[in-house]
Length: 421
Image (tube, rainbow, N blue to C red):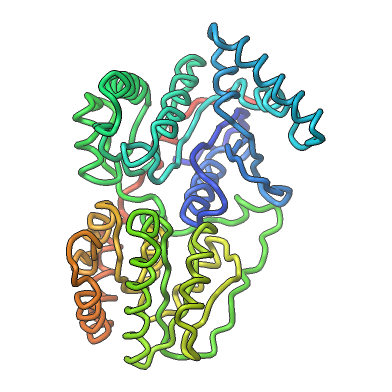
């Protein structure tokens, strides 16, 4: 059902960003689905980035923890408002004039929001900091205070044991997290273990297991995203047999730069021995420095560094030109698999195993913790995949046809907005 009535209203999208191409893709998909149904509503996008959105059919709002506190309207509001005001006065006196008093103007944007849709890929769980988890508790509490329905789109929910915290703090955050998550209208848990983690917290009634939205979504009407749809501008490829390498700073953070570079480097050397050209590219802006280090360490006529900042449309189009992808970024893999490109996943989290299993590719996931012989195991699997590319592509295509029958946006059909006068 697509609503064609002349409706007005306001939807706030949280949890996305432009610097990560997976987060950007989820933002564009959500905006597209909203615009298909409700072309005249206002769409707000919460971000901390400095963006020029003049060519986009949505606007951004800076929703800081202070903003959330002030919107809630509880006894802390006056204290937080005074603190925020004094911070801005101090910035002014120091000559820093950018975004002064922006928290107060942003509150006006957030007021009267009809719905909040969260598109975080993975933001809740004890792998993340206490502060980051607290942000989501406060965001849900704000929605509850304002009686705004809150929808979690498909995302990973990590373990919620918080075993690294002291008992009092651990008990407090677990209680508050459970209470906050139970308020959500729906939580689409991307994996079976995510659903289990929520059940352990007593969050059951609003949980539905649903696969990744980027993988499920077939296409975007870009006229719903852009005022003037820009051309897709892809890097030039002069080689024929090509394999892409997409690192992830999470591997570096967890296992160290030397371990990360050695694994990627050894794999690249092997690919060159197989007479393939290797293209190193980032799927998130924070990974570009790792890409540069990897290129510098392995400078070779058959290795290329893509420094061009591609958007998610361009990345997906570009990745379709490769024979194989070796990646540690979740949505880098998803974009490739949507284009039926076989992948090797170097994993730092269990979410990779389940996602690859949806497409019958679970034998292509390698957890660094699982073996000291990871490089040799990856080499053997690369050899097998390259020897059976046609069969791999057929299997991926078949599984895509099955899973893309799912729809995580059906709830949008029933949203209630006032008639526009």
